[in-house]
Length: 369
Length: 129
Image 1 (tube, each protein chain N blue to C red):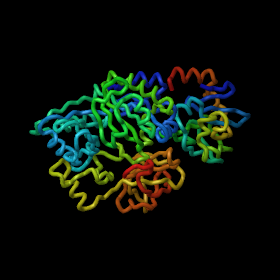
Image 2: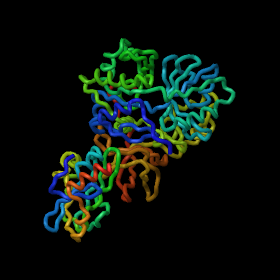
Image 3: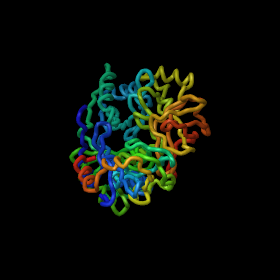
Image 4: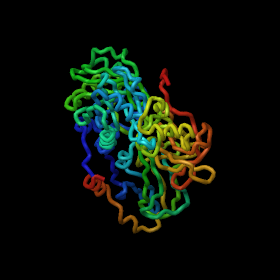
């Protein structure tokens, strides 16, 4: 077991009363004031996350596009400069290595943002898939810090710290070389909360000052420092999948409900044959949303039961703070995946009634699908 | 951290208020602060017996499921139904409104293993528990 790593903001978290836990090999705050309060702040005002644990890999070279087209399931050729794409990255059998964001910085220059717990595995996988592609890969995770400013007031807060016209930066677009509070950053209009917001990439040594400047600018707006606890409940309500839960090497993107990011007709790529086969035959399992209609809270790994047998597994379950209901996501046999379907979640040996409901559980006003 | 002097404490962070042969039990201020926002409580069943040290109540925060262990054994004579609909009282008032149950103590010897408020305070600082 290697020792858990600290982000450049570790001391900042301690100073502000962050309750530190280990996540994906990193020491990060699970909460500051409390998960429910922080969750509410992001939905109604704004919250600031340290997401420096995320991994960043640069892909450069003549074959950058061809390398990526083979590596991931989405069609990277559709990206234009300064645009971002979400994509799964699959094994040959269609299982998921990771899900990531691809930033197109230039014709032969891409930035990949990968999950913290998967950095080494992904790096290895990319090396194995380099083949004869003329491409240079650089893991810049350690020197890159990332802050996520999320919530309806995020733009108002950030506009105090930069001359860049943030209102012109659309969802899933980014801008390089943006000066924020005197520091050089890359900002993207992205997030993992279901709210409007920005992800701000900077040099590790600038992170603490940037954090302080954003917190100060956000104070009149009710900005709170927020932790991983509410990051999970926020992404869960918006039904954004989490690797290790909704996504894994044993779950395909089609089963996980992110088939729209698999472009089977784009040319050859890892997992294409397996995924084409799944699409043709129909998937045997599907990810569904459910609400507990009995009493109890579903948790990851709890069995889903129907007709006297196990028909699936909960992938995420908790109390949803915005909806004030006990809800969950589960991977179940396809015949039990229709909205309105009733089944049971086995909670501590007892079957508790639940019903399939539409996804996502939460969508902000005015949000495009 | 609030640790009332008149109560007894278990090493599993429950408090015990002894009145004759009955014990009112709940979780400590320290325990509720460690758990975070309590969003669900599976209260014990009245008129059942509980063994000292056994899980007799389940408390769920947003992130985690925690078993609450009986600080004394005996018959559960009263339960706090209010926890079913308003689990947050466990955070707001752990020594008052947030009590869990009243247990009729089967064996007074169970009390010997409990800590005084000074001992409990020392326990949580030293053990970092």
